[in-house]
Structures are given as structure tokens and as C-alpha cells.
Length: 93
Image (cartoon, rainbow, N blue to C red; front, side):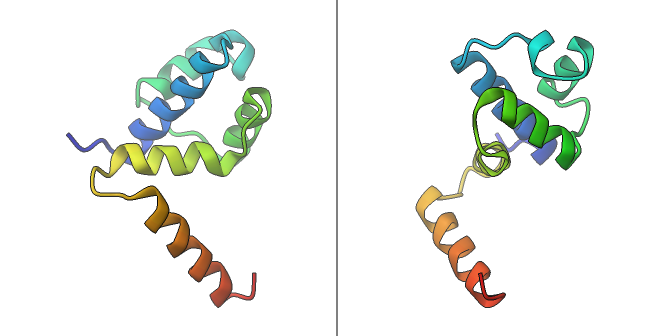
């Protein structure tokens, strides 16, 4: 089953949060906000993803990357990393 990216990012946030034993209350602006994100009923801004990543001790890209992998059954982690590497090289990074 393919999830929308916003739902998958919510799943990613929840997975990292539970793995690190962080409460919803500790993670963000409010418990209802985090609950809605995790349930796929909202979208987090990049600023909010960065704030949550900081609390979780992960890179913000890890949350987005995991969400993309969750949302796309055909995605291959290694192929996606290589694609990103190539695309960054295109812009000189």
C-alpha cells in the first residue's frame, strides 16, 4: 500500500520518536500537532522538521528520506542515495 508522502513522513517521525523513547509532548509545539502529523492529518514545514530532528537527534533529511522510502514501495535506499549524490554533483555540491 502506497502512502501519501505527508502520511509517510508522519510515520517516519513516529518511528524515530518511539525508537528514541521521546514523548509527543517533548517533540514539538504541542501534543495535538505531533499527533496530527503522525496520523498524516497535517504537513510539517521544513522548520518544524528541523526542530523535531534536533530533539530526536537525527538529521532532518533522515526524516524526509525515511518518509520517501515508506511512501514508495519501489524505492531502493542505495539507488536513491546514489541519485541524490549525482543530483548534488550537478549543482557543484
